[in-house]
Figure (tube, rainbow, N blue to C red):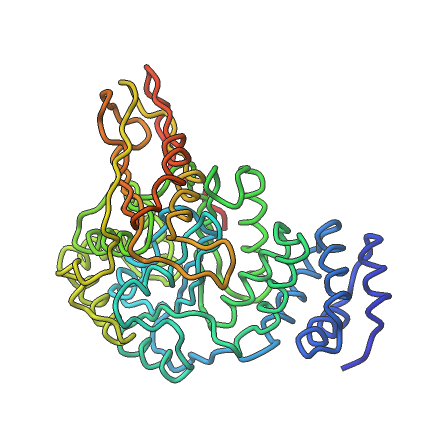
Length: 432
């Protein structure tokens, strides 16, 4: 590969110029291997943060990250391969019931998920609530579970897209995390490394999302759909609401329990609606006929739940949690938040509830923090619901002596007024 001068590339991007694919490839490879210094890449990411990347640069940047390490070869999988990615939210356990539903409809789902950070939860943390469940798999085990179960839910391996791991840590330390091109290339490089036929994006918008503005969410969705097109992978996106938590449970063990309820044909209406919407998109991308009927059939017959049970066992987890929730970890104490007046819930703020759950221990402020799988929040009253003074708004499950620093923050997430709010729109837009 031709050698370039890092300082010259930084200066050109700083001044609003364009980098060629060869220059970007050299830069990403050099940073991954240590030839480009942290301080030089920090300067480059700040230049990108300020001036952005055009479509050609973004395609090259994503491609260079994608090929910085191993790329899965799943060509022997005899089914269409479709994954889903969420930009993150509070109570967002959608992947857990979604993947077995789609797999039971004869679509392979090689799902690589992440951990929670800040006020948002992570799929891997939730799954690790299940005793024995292993999320770090080598390529051989990953492929075997995918073949045996039709889906697999694992973390990113050390050799898959190593450039992203280095870049994310650098961006986190240099104030360049909230850059749409850098976020989009980070997400898409990891997803493209899964050797997918298609990808469906759940782009969250609202108080509990990383993007609180609709225009930013739309730009993010459009950017990632464009990256998919530049790499010949069909990508569609739904922009979904995250002004209040999704479902009734926020935490880890309690979100696993709620996911199991949905696979049994029960569960909260908002969780069902968003999960079904994303499942329909995944089946459409895979070319599955009569997708609504197929979804109904695999849930009502128990086929989706059976897939989940097989996957849990294949990952080393205890499948008995499906019928015996006491096998999940639970904190020993409960605290009820009650309504101070009668009326209608007009705010159930996702960010504040997520932050309260994090303070209880359900999330982390730094990547290296431990997570307490047994704590969490049950939402008894949500937007539009009528309450009477003294009614329970939420139940906090916590460890002894941990409640005082959480109660005020959690209580302030609810607002109760005399009139009900407008009906909540769960799925705002579809972008393809």
